[in-house]
Image (cartoon, rainbow, N blue to C red; front, top):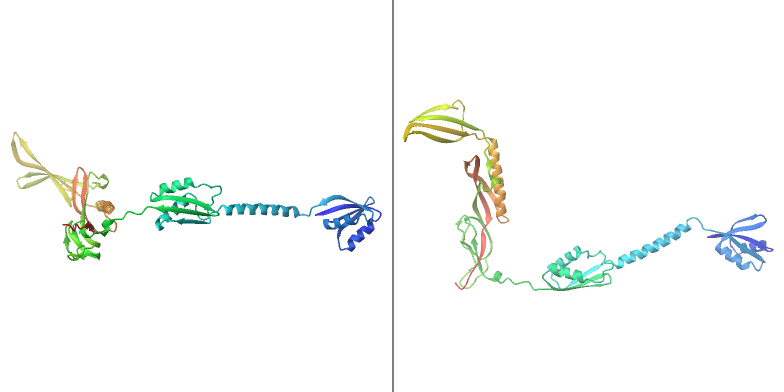
Length: 371
């Protein structure tokens, strides 16, 4: 900051020379209406003011001048200070550590996930949170395996103490058991981890038949484990009860009409139309006063097979396959599929589909050693 002063008195010239001789600087000097004016720094002004009485002078401050940029610099200082306060406040309310004790690895993972959903995680903020009773109640409710839980904040860390109930012990897993067939089929391959196999590959087995025995000898029993993949067969009927599987018959039909007398058949309509493929025939006899004439009327309907019908069959096989896979256990594979039977009923084509499946048929059956 600079000041512009007016200097009056008898020794004003000697005052100025004295200040300059001590190394101080006067930025500008001018005379206006017989009055002396000088522009100088605050340091020079203080020095000149200390000498004014010695030289019988008077110094009057006319105005103060703030250099360009100094005000902006002061604003930056204030802004920096406020920013520093805000950052310190934010850092002091940020969670930098979460220490959980008393839980298993799985229990700790579940609690951390629930804390994260509630906004408490490393890098998150707590601000005015001083009581965690509501959070404790929520964690206990969402994790029923916890017996008790407490949360405390010390500095920038959360400390959680908890205890969980002992998991129930499944004693059946220690009991000896066989592997039996859950479905009938032909064994394809076997992977035995424990137990004594009693069947072999390419052998047909019935439902409930023992595949792997848990009885190793007269005194030793184990829990048999492994996988027995077998070839099984499933049929799926596309009928009226499952309308989405019913295929509408939309092939073109060729109809021929005949009169039959004994072994003679006389065409009466449609005999110029070429027809081949599947057909169905209906017969009507002529009766009068209980007497049956040796003449019958026959109507033969030919269903022409085309690409559209094949496409409909493929669609039915795909729908049936997806439905069957949804019913089977994970890992089952459909190896083959075919239409076992097809018939027409009330204008609808109905199919019975057959699927060849490779699946694990091994089921655990515990051994009662008291028998």
